[in-house]
Length: 209
Ligand code: AP5
Ligand code: MG
Image 1: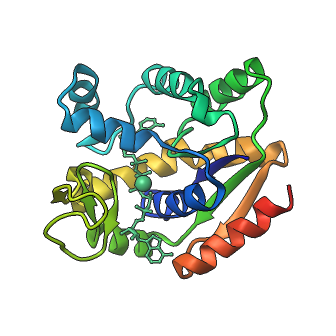
Image 2: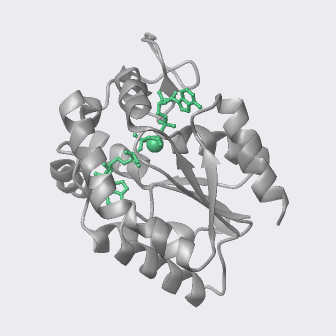
C-alpha cells in the first residue's frame, strides 16, 4: 500500500503515520524526521537544512526530492510506504509522480487531514519530541518511553515559527491539494477528532483499495 498523508503542520500526519506503519507493516517516511536526524547528527545536510527549518521555511525542492528518491529505492519500500510531509510544493508533487512512473508504481491513497488553524497552534505548543526516534509526547517526560532518548521542544514549534510555518503551508503547500483534486485523487479526513477516530477514517479509505 502506497499512502500519501497531506495536511498542515500539527494536523496529525506523524501521529497517524506511526499507527499506520504498525498496522500495515510498511515504512513511515517523514522528510521532516529525516532532516531532524541529520540536524541532530550535525551532518552537512543537517546544518544546511537547519537554516530553513528553524525559520519555518521549506528546504529547497531538489534536495528533498533527491532524499525521497534515494529512500524509496530501499528494499523495505517494496510492499509500500507512508509519505508524511512530502510533497509540499507543486514541483515536489510533479517530481514524485515522475519518480513513481519511473518505478512503475502508483499512489493508492492521497489523504488530506484537515483541521482548523486555532487547533493546530494549540497542539504544536503542547508537543515534546524525542531526539532519537521522533516519538511525540503531549506532556514533559524525562526520557523517551520508547527508546530512552532525550526529549526536546522542536525549535520550529515556537509560536513565532509556527505562524511562519502556517503561512508557508497556506502559500506553498495548500495549492497542491488542487493538484490532486483536479485528478480526482484527493480524499479528505477530518483531523479534528480523537486520534483513534481519525485512524478509523483513514483505514476506511485504505481498505477500499
Ligand atoms: P515536518 O516534520 O513535516 O513538520 P510539519 O509538516 O510542519 O508537521 P508536524 O510534524 O509539525 O505536524 P504533524 O502533522 O506531523 O502532526 P503530529 O502528528 O506531530 O517538517 C518540518 C520542517 O522540515 C518543515 O517546516 C520544513 O522546513 C522541512 N521540510 C520537511 N519536509 C519538507 C519538504 N517536503 N519540502 C521542504 N521542506 C521540508 O501532531 C501534532 C500534535 O498534535 C502532537 O502533539 C500530537 O500528539 C497531537 N495530535 C495529533 N493528532 C491529534 C488528535 N487527533 N487529537 C489531539 N491531538 C492530536
Ligand atoms: Mg510530523
